[in-house]
Length: 519
Image (cartoon, rainbow, N blue to C red; front, side, top):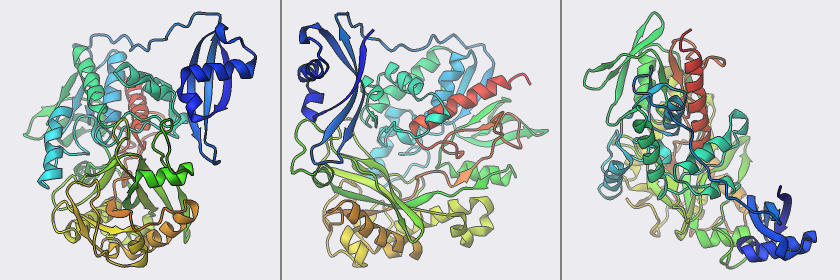
């Protein structure tokens, strides 16, 4: 059995196997030549002091052979003729629900409004270059969902919801680097995720499941308070009695459909704000307290939470060495998001900086009932479209200018490819959000000296942080509280907040569905 040690070492030692082995031998009185292997189990960075340290949990093999544990996928049965379960949406919740469905011997039929990962690329190019928004194929809709082309961050605080390691192992089995099992804040990268997503889809199909692209659900057949089928665009009906609803946080047409059919939904608080871009070098200097981070440290992230006048303001989805992307899902709106490639090697970093919203903030939209927050969100996105020049050019302002209420006389080029329009953020946001952002950024600078600089550029809005609607479900059966056989699932239903938690929820919903199958 290997010895396990928790140690703290310099970045150079942590990155150099020979030096790490010598350090462990010296510190623990183990002869160097008797250590056959050092396996890093967990890794995190401690940048609180000027001398940055790497925290490691290691397994040390002494006079015994190390055999690399290959992560293998489960044995998936053939399910072509098994009972069918419809899964609406091929994001993390939908795909992991489908995988678990196959594993448990049932046949998933995945209905995805968008295109496969490769075909999506053309539509992403069109929105970046030509400002054309395809309502069914964009950064939010299509195979893999919003996560595929927006970074692949795997960090989650939802460890009590389910087995995080199981999801990570599945991702490794489908092609992700095994480093995601080690790093405290694991990350795959937008350039690596498409191949992993395609491999998951191929596995589902190879074992008898179905994955149907450009297949949009437009209605539900409900009889005697239970699902009896789903209606597809074009008029075809898929007759199923069990439906996993995993459509993501931007499927406004689904929220509107449920509301029209008087299927219970609830308004949900969320957060909304801007995406700010700095040079990665500046963030490294602030966080690592040095001029040059050197070859052994990764591009630094940051995380800040402040209370501004009793309202929370915080960083969200921070992307070291990344870029800002246009994430509108309909013409006539502007939305931003950020992503990083696997090496996080871009010269800029960006983060959503968002303001906590409460249900009472949506009073102006009370006539929309539970869709009030969605319409609040939509109005800001449509306002940004108009302010930006009625293209995908984004309203933008230098950071110090924004805090002082000055329109920037010029703007540097940023990573946002469709371009910028110099604007006053006060024309995009309601006064309470604008004022909170102005004051909050000054407070951020107290936490990270140098953060408040006019070299940084604010892009608006960052509005799709989470779903503005919750679709209620029974806490035991996970069925909708009103409709038998309908399982609200994942981020769009209000039960997840990222790739890992959505995948966990997808598995949970399938397991609950199968447990209820014959009841």
